[in-house]
Length: 118
Image (cartoon, rainbow, N blue to C red; front, side):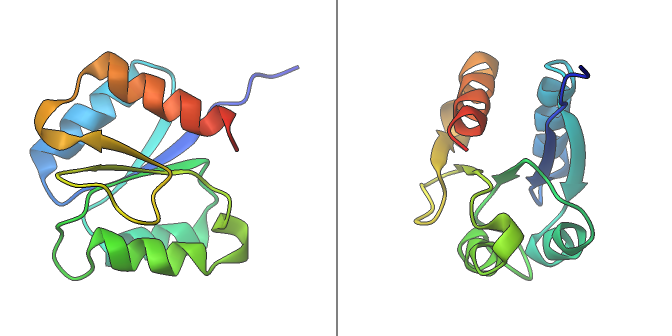
């Protein structure tokens, strides 16, 4: 049997933060795609099924709260875990990682825990 590789969409407007998150996820065997804001994320979500979404809050064009509202209305995304990596928790996210003080290990543990709870 082939091991399932989890597909994660990183939604983050800071290119530096996206690079850090991407590097951490890739070194932990996740498949990664990126979106710079909620509008770009919605375009990707409509085209592909992700196993988890790692989402910022404060972004241009569409913030994290509005993005999560849109995601939760889609039947195929109702149960997909969303981890907010932001300055504050998002109401409809399944987990929260503080952007200002996170560790690589804590981020990976949070993602794996969220995926296990699907």
